[in-house]
Image 1 (cartoon, rainbow, N blue to C red):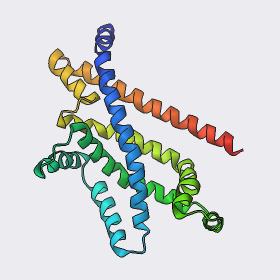
Image 2: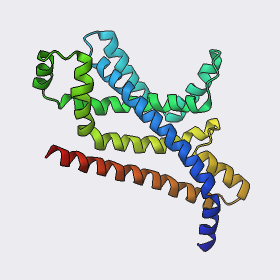
Image 3: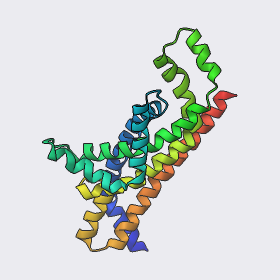
Length: 219
């Protein structure tokens, strides 16, 4: 055990560098996925049948296929079309499309919880549909769905480990490089697991603090 902590300390700078890449990737994917998820939610409630079909197909596709397959499609398909996407961008697009499908369903329940009278009152006051969405609905939906959105973000962090297959130097990729150079895969991957645990634990703690803050504000 003392030897493990010695190795862990020597690997920590490289692991933290990979963890920063993972954190940046997941933050980009989660924020972009939130925005896209709102779009998918709006399409699902559109009076136009085609848009409702697109939303249903989106959710079915990205919830019903492996993240790895989605990642590889986002990585290889652009090159077939003559586009060379950086690996970070390809990974961010794949995770964004995936989490948007899940977030759209989370947001759907949040938007449904808002009393219709609020929207009618806002419209009477002269607010546009866009203003109602971003000033009235979205702030409330964030509070109502925070635990579910936080759980989804943690899932995105864990799912992001697959991006190592396209050679993005995330936390898992750094672990693979260390395992191949040190010939100590057990200790390396235990270290990687501890870093992932630290990331998800910090997210859970931040979510609890945000919930407590909003509860105090609502009193």
